[in-house]
Image (cartoon, rainbow, N blue to C red):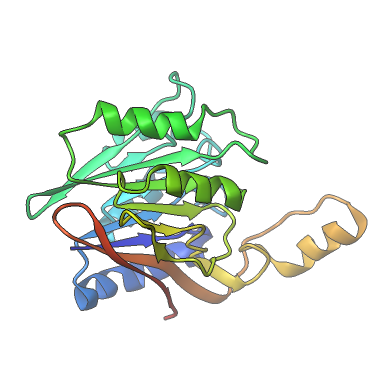
Length: 258
């Protein structure tokens, strides 16, 4: 079986390339499950219910979110109506929305959830290691394989979680930094791992934003609006092949342009 995990979708350019390419990639590569991080899909910060629905209609099976989950006004109400969208699982229990999603195809049940890292991250979150342990234990018997997304800044935290879940998750895949890492690999107990899948959006940019305002902010420290850029739009993703046992058999990083 095959899982395509699409890295952070940034703004309208990211949404458009997913809509244009996701169905084609799915058909050409025999993809069973498509999961995408959509936390920057609305003007580069957060997401809306309407955008969630458009991505799901474009062929995404599950949308995951990260530390910008509540950036768009009113989404805390909209998320409760979206059954294939999950907010980070290790947010405080009072946060609205689902902390995981289970999707099924051909008799295989895939558990999907995200944990936020705590190193250099601003949003309040519980321990990602303990939350992942608790989720896998609580849902044991309800899934055949698990995709655990680690939305974090520190590569050490991401690698540590990968090893912590090795043999218990089908894949542990990182997001948040918007820069793809060259470490896609199978860990020793056949968990697919990658520190960061990278960004789906404009790569002629600084992390998806227009170059000049960001450079200017570094030079003089003055506040500026960081609009979403438009040049060199790419779809970044990880393709994970796995057996019906839930054990990964291979992982490949992919980058597409229109």
